Image (cartoon, rainbow, N blue to C red; front, side, top):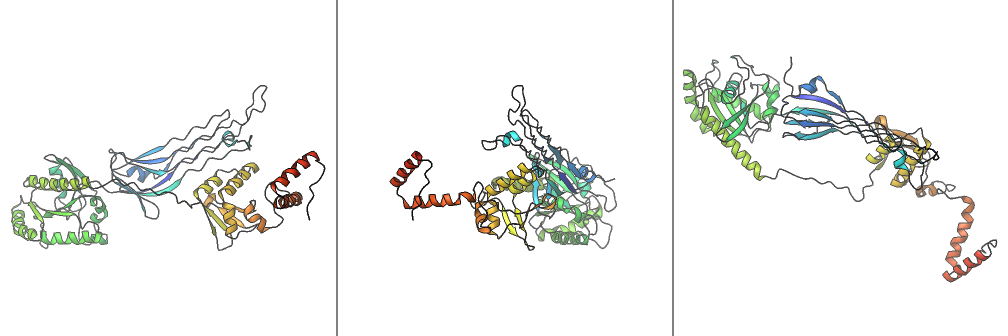
Length: 490
């Protein structure tokens, strides 16, 4: 049975926002007391939180689909609907989150660190909130916005200070068991360690963690063995400890060659070139192991390595090794404390950003993109003519129709707003001043009447020809003689 999982796919679906309510207050002696429909509740979010009690992504392996609750619809009598509950998902410390394209979205390090995996939809406004001096009794309400749906890839990278690397059966698990309270499985056959193990070490006043990963073998970069698959768990370490087997029974191996082979595999993996290396010559409790350690120690020191002879069985040399690792951890923490770790990135909206874009497609249609316009479309009940008219007014006020005209749209052009299942397709009918008068000479602005066109022309010409005093005298004359038309000058 699988007990350790460090890569999973999470399908997160946030809750839908509740629909707004359409209601008219009715009381005794007040049959039509005005709109009183409440707003819909907000949909629940899906939030990932780093939890110290979680060490694996096993729960997501068994249950990859997670969904938050939706908000309730609004009520009459000015009552808003209840919001959906947020779904809190605990993850291990060191979880890295990627999107479907492989882009890193977050690196969750530190207990309590949170990440918004999927945002709940906003609740729709009721007809009470939509009422105004111009729209006193709206007969419609806005729908709740659908919750965000995302597929995320979660990858665990253990947060450890020191990493133990080496061949299988080199004694890494025995070493971590000897210097910490960790109790990994230990046996005298290769690939005993199948999953990374973490141990906490106390050296003087310094407390740090040590990670033991499955052993590396030649060809690990081509998929052989298990170690390369778990090397991501040593990427956060400040130093690597090469555990070399000085008591191996294989005649074609020696500690120096083992070190070079492991370094080649680490180089093929990449990203670990700047880590400090320490060499631990293990199994010196064996006569042959001690002789081999004495033979290769100076050679390794000449290569620039800090070398320690140790024995996980007899605990010989472990104190010096643990204090050496503690010094590296102290130095790394001191350097990290002096660095500026918190960066606040501000991305203000450009002054010329309209909040939407209009694109001409190859088939002659037009696509409107923008978070605001897409949200408006999602919240519109297209079965209600008044709601559709409200959407048209909002789009016109935002400047969508002017931009369509600039891009070459004409009456009857196909316009698409949104994408996927939420895409809305309609034929464009110009309703604003920009474009309407130029697209068709017989079209007029809202509220205008062609029968008044001659009167407007007369008034414009009178204002151009007459002075202010003449206009005032003419106005007084018209008031005194209401049936006398304004005489147009030749």
